Length: 283
Image (cartoon, rainbow, N blue to C red; front, side):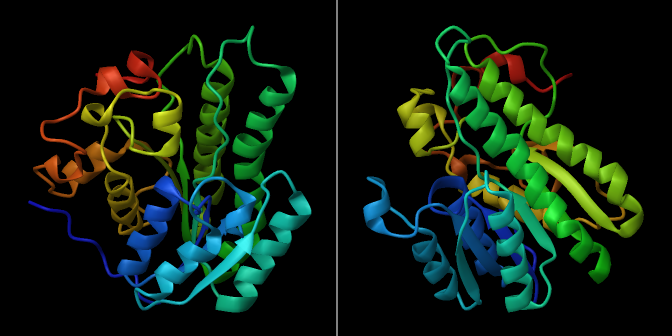
């Protein structure tokens, strides 16, 4: 059975890191489901990067799917800019009930090879950025009586990550913040959950860092569909979870994940997962 997306008409999502890759696909999939989108990121002009895509391109693609969209330039290291972006989103749409912490800096290197300033960047963008974005929305979510905070980060099922300690630490920090928020906000009807792919996803990062080949990857759609399924869950019933996308889709009744493969044949998660066997699902 294929995945059947929920109807998100009338809802609005604030998504970080929508320029390309997973964040862009999440934005487009939510738009397809009727959700208005706030597209945020650093790239606002094609001349700003040697890579394709801007936050405006994503916003326009969302609007082409029949929803309203707003593009806001955002540096997750800038607390004042985050607060201004949150205010702008709320002023524009009235209510923003979906917050998706997707943006992350990535650098895979040993402790010996990774300089302190790069460690600081990973910490500031990934952990602090998730903290500040979520924190800025809490009063609004409490005022409207609920919502979802979702974070693109892994279940904490490892005690080490040789060769990528700084990145792994920063992603686990994103998870810890999200799970802590779940306990803090549960009484307000606000759900906080983390989601993470079992296999590597076809993005620029997987290609750049050599995380397998196309045979090992799934498309970003599998992450976006898992997000849609999480948004269809009752916040009062499903919060404080860190889930794998494939698991949540199977729970939703998806019996064949082949549509998400980049090539014929299912990928091998142990050869392509970002943290290899160290992030295997616990039995």
